[in-house]
Length: 154
Image (cartoon, rainbow, N blue to C red; front, side, top):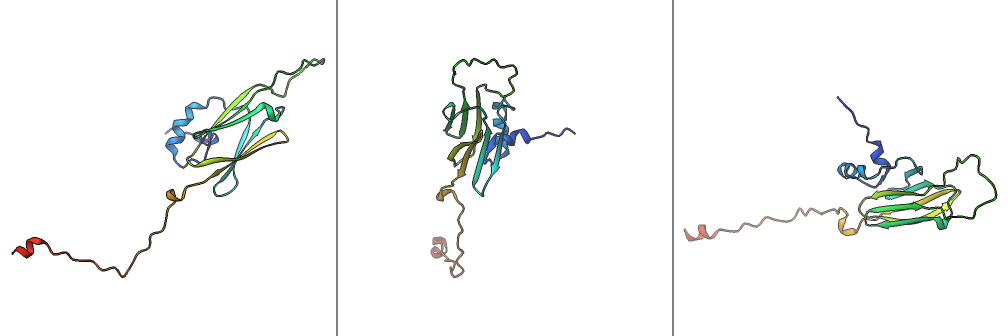
């Protein structure tokens, strides 16, 4: 019997409750490694995505939330040619684009950049009409019997 590890599917989604939606979106993310990121649950309906963007300035990053997709892009601005020559480049400065599929009613609340980490805070706000509600059961209601017209005709 063959077993499948579904862990990669959970890495690029936030707030999903349905496995089939995860499987549909799995084929769209083909860049698993750069930049590294974490997805945290910070409350019952609150999430945080943390992306390691060392070397990128605030104006070199963009965050776009469109429909159920959150896209984080980073592109280095063509800088001045420095007089020094780089002998070894270990800090990646390449452009990237990372897309996250968001569940219904998940909204971007805030974004901040500190110590080379981009934090994007998300919250799931379910409208009152979609929330489950408690229905009271009345014990005093009596069933009404309606006589049929066929019984009266006889």
